[in-house]
Structures are given as C-alpha cells and as structure tokens.
Length: 226
Image (cartoon, rainbow, N blue to C red; front, side):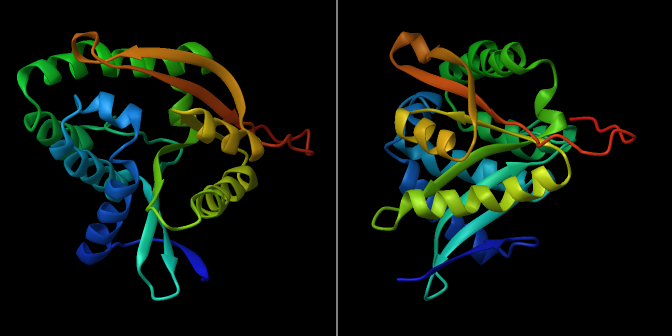
C-alpha cells in the first residue's frame, strides 16, 4: 500500500479527530505516556488532543495517510520561538483544561515534578531555552498494522529538511530504545538520559535528549542564531 505525508497547515475538525484516533491508538501502550497520565487509559485521548490543539495554535501537525486518504499517523512539531504550553495562549487553552481532567494527585505531580524535571533535563543537556531556538518534535505515532518506522522517518525528514535549510537544530526526546535507534539513523545525537518516577513512584521511565545539529554555514560573513 502506498502512503503520503501531508502538513495540515489549516486542519479541519475531521482531520484533527482522525489524527487523534491514529495517535491515540499508536500511543495507548507507550510506557512513557502511561507514566505521564498516571496509567489512566481514559486520559490517552485527552492528552493527545491537548498536544494536537497546541500544534494548531503555535506548532505544526504532519500526518501520514494511506492510499484511501485515511490518516494513520501524525507528528506534532514546534518551531523556533514556540514550544508546548509555553505561551499564555497555550496555557489557557491547552494546559489548564488538560490538568483539570487529572485527579489532584496527578495534577500535583505534573506541576511539582514532571514539568520542572522534563524542562530541566532538556535545559541541562542543551542549554537554557534551546527548544525556543530549534525545531522540536513533541509527539509522533503510527497506528498499528502500518509501516511505523518508514512513515515516522518520512514525517521527521519533512521537518528536518526545513530546519536544516534555515540553519536550525532539531530536537527530539526518545522514550524507548527503538525510537532512540530510529532517531540515531536520522542523524540525531544522544546528549543525555533522564529517569522519571511517576506518581508515588509507581512507574519509572527513561528519556534520551537528542539533537540533530544544523549543518555549518559556508558564508563566514553571515551569522545565524541556532
């Protein structure tokens, strides 16, 4: 079966629903996602929807479609100057409504542990505000029964090429060995590993901070901020 990759520059509600279905199906058994939502399967879709909504506000959504035009996978990126739930608009429309669906214990863990440790790990390995000076892959997934590595590679390369063209690094966080190996094949370099403990220490998950450096510019007379 043939597949195509498409940037949803102005996604319709139906396209967002289809992307949510594909991503939620792909990620429902992901160990890192399970940790972030306190192992509550009812929170997979709200979490995915929150990331997609953030992508419509200040990010980019790319999807993989089969020959029938059915969305079977998706990726949410944030380009230079933006990141997930960084702005007031995203916090108001995305983060606050998402946290409102969590119980008190999970809310406290997100606010006091997960978000500070997640941002701190990236800043420690790459420097403060590196995400705001790069292209950053926030979420990616391919529904079962489709060539996941092939389609993930194509969706990532679509943004990598743009980032490299404009002189920006690209950042990802691998949350399992398979993803880490795929990112390495695409030129991402491991810059450090962070271990997370879930709510009450019930879960443990790893995250590798990885960067694909922008190629050096040949024109010595032009400076670029990356």
